[in-house]
Image (cartoon, rainbow, N blue to C red; front, side, top):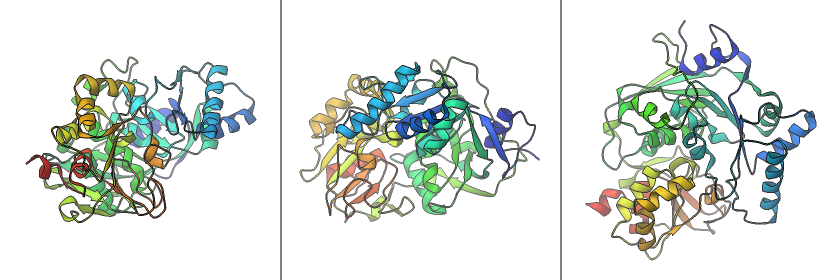
Length: 420
């Protein structure tokens, strides 16, 4: 029997010719990740083991959630991680001013590559499937143990094959695709399964689209999301990943628990209403929903291409007087590139606030907390009750195009309405 991409990566790492869904394995991993919220509890577990780190070059620590530190508690957590990084001479510790949002930063720094296994104490670690890696989130105890052992346990996931055809229309992005898919199968539709993407439609998806799609695989309950390597992947990796890597492809006779086909040309801009990512509706049916805030950024949509979409909409327009618009470049390099392209100037002239890289409002941390009764359109990945502030606030998930257009109009709107 053939294997899926995920099965092949696991089989290669454990030295087997074959693995199948349901198998329990212990595998070495290629990178272990933690942030300023999850890192300290993982460090506490690691210190109980009484061993050195397994490899100082294969641990990445990124203070991005409450950093730059918003209060004494967050500063204490960051200090614990900073002290750990210095004590163990961790190569990939990213301090304020040199850091970024972890799931944009790591691939841009070349720390993930095709065929590798990456685990992180953050559920959106599944982002790196965009470059053909098996990446998934784990609990702090697992990560603490991995700091010492370089290994983790896995139950081989079954897979859902998502065959993509056609090409996205103008103003339709990868965010619209993944929200549409989650709307189709539900937030538990891929529970502990791998979302494996295939088909000719992949060629029309940018790397930013693919990162967004894999990032939100967890919002369908998936263990991971993964794309095959193509010319776009190779172009992205060139100059970033200097070590040798091998692309992994699914066998023609691989077994899938389910197969879904999506014609990209038939998709339209959508928005996920509160309080679940599966609550997906067309933007054109949402015009009666007024908003108080628009957030453009996060590990899901804070890349340069996302900022370009927002700049296209906001150029020569103003943020609605009743709306706060917050834009967060995902890394310092993206921030710099956005300045060079004139995007930051466009944002500020439009009346938006531009932040240093941080997760900030995505998890209700800071830099954009909502009061009771307020509504936000956001390019982030979760809209659970109270996610961005008060339990009586509302978060609507959308693409950068839609979020920027909504900031201009004052209600949920499409980019076409602003630019036509």
